[in-house]
Length: 414
Image (tube, rainbow, N blue to C red; front, side, top):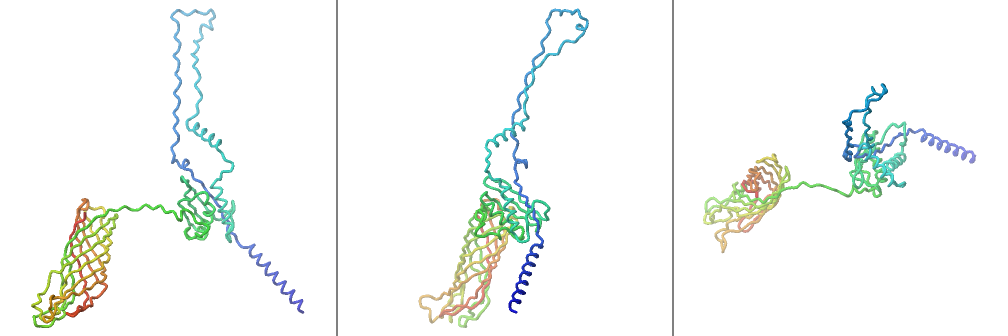
């Protein structure tokens, strides 16, 4: 009973194996033709034909004139009536056309330098692509009767070829800017993988098929012009600050408009329609409340500050004599506020400083004019939105507010 079961199991396994082989044998294979073309610049008319000067025609000798004496008359009437014989000219030398002569010389030189072991790159690459296609599951490289085609064009360079490849099955085309003879095997593997599987050739790279074109980048950069900038204007800042009323009354929070003086020094690089600006600004507060008008202390005034920032610009008329521009960026700011001390605590200094700062996000709008001159001018407005809130205090009082603002300035670019 045990032996019978073993035989049944063996028969079923053999049947399954045979069915699997039959399924594989009956599976449809996509038949692919491979066509590799080595292009020639001469055949495309890119190289002018060699000029060969034509030989000068041989001079034609002048006909010999008859002697002055009266010719003798033959007694034979037939001879007397025949015309005189035409002068015999020397034969012209046989010459070949210039193009045929140059082609004959070129063929003779190629035959003299022929190397029986020289590699023909188009035939080698064709065979390598056929090998890669055949080893893909479900594909077979054939010479005729194919349903799909891989077409490869090789355009010669001084040190290799630029290769274009296209597969009709996926309608995909890939390009390699430069490949050399020792890379044709890796190229065939990557082109076949990319075209048949419909993906970029950059996705087919592995440790064994890296091409020189993957690591050698020859990039041409856009040249720009750099300028220094100097600007001046005013900062407008809105903040809720401790504000004194009468001299003997405590301070209260009031919204106030601060207008410190602003000076800017920077560098502006221009790259066609784009610009980059690095700058440093200094601000100086010009309004202060007299200490005698705040005996209880606590009144706050803007004292001074500085900003270090970066802006990106976009010119709306890059080639114009004048151009509007917009941009954005950010700056880091440090600001100092001064608070009046109470009258009872004024020993030496009447005011005490508070330092605050943070990052501001900038939106800007400007206008450059006289841009064809080496020295030109601009006007600009920056809207500044702080990413922080001011919250600081000392013995004289404290500040707790959010202070957005803007910068209005005119400047020179040189």
